[in-house]
Amino acid sequence: MRIRTVARATTEDDPAAALAAVLGRPFPGIELFDRIGDTVFFIKDHEARYVAANDTLARRCGFADSHALIGRKASEVFAAPLGERFEAQDLKVIAEGLSIRGRLELHLYPDGGEGWCLTWKEPLIDAAGAIRGLAGISRDAPALSTSAAVSAALSAVLAYIDDHLDQPLRIPELAARAGLSPFQFDQRIRALCGLSAGQYLSRLRIDRACDRLRHTGAPLSELALECGYADQAAFTR
View 1 (cartoon, rainbow, N blue to C red):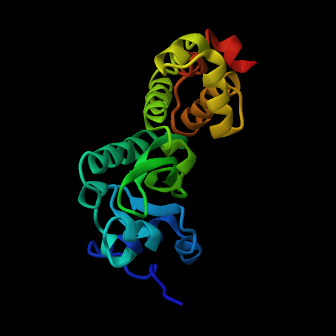
View 2: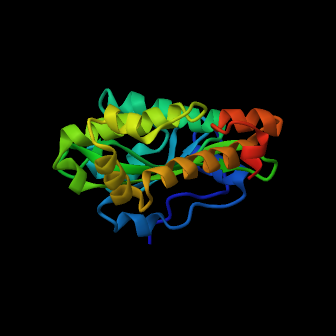
């Protein structure tokens, strides 16, 4: 079995070892992800450099294996504009500690073309509570790629929701943004997440609140408004 990361050295030229050392744990399970053809897996350090990845990701980006990704950023691995978009997303997760859960976005498919996927990213926290990097996966969603225009519109609306959680968000208005009826919008959200559109909004707000509570000392009244609740009482409920 290949061992890809060793937590002994902490030199600047070995970012994988450095991150494993500060986290106090290695990166288990990478070999498992090598065998899942529809999912890419990665771990990145505080500068958004790859310190571990599965071979699935490497092959899709035109590299022989995952070792070639180590020390690179997304902008050095993916062609524009995907690379710049992923790197900006990485840096935001690391800076703010806000997780990404099932975001619909474009990625590279095995044939080298772009296709839709669902992405999860979680900040990696050390024993002192500092953010030291992130871990993530992107899972292919080929059924969505058969309707590219609708998927692009839906992706844009989901990104809009994520960026405007502090504002009132009404299902009919969001559906109109996607060029869908409220029923169609709800059905697509259910197909993606197993939740109704209303439940999806509630989950996003609660997840955002949990992330902010972990990484900030802001008062509850401020967090309530930031997460789209009318006041602290509504947030508490």
